[in-house]
Image (cartoon, rainbow, N blue to C red; front, side, top):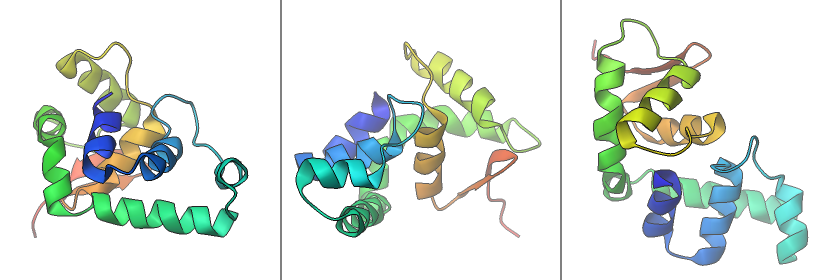
Length: 133
């Protein structure tokens, strides 16, 4: 998946990649529990939370976000053409078609990736571009 490839290229460390992807849940309905990772790796739930948070902070750097340019280029026209926030169902389906993915991205993964971009707003209504005031 593009999200999995992005995380793998941006982070590199296989253990951190597995934790981030497990929390992003690109292939599952919901994220893995922190305690699940803790048991597998012999770490506390809190330590797993810290590692995942640090990993997300690394992903937010502009040099890392640039790795997602094909994803952003596919998403931007969808968001720009909408007058209201685009729901995650609609956005996932549109991205699946635009990027020729075999399956639509999981909502949790899509929402988390959108939250990384400083110009996007994610709310209960969906995703939209933060218009300058």
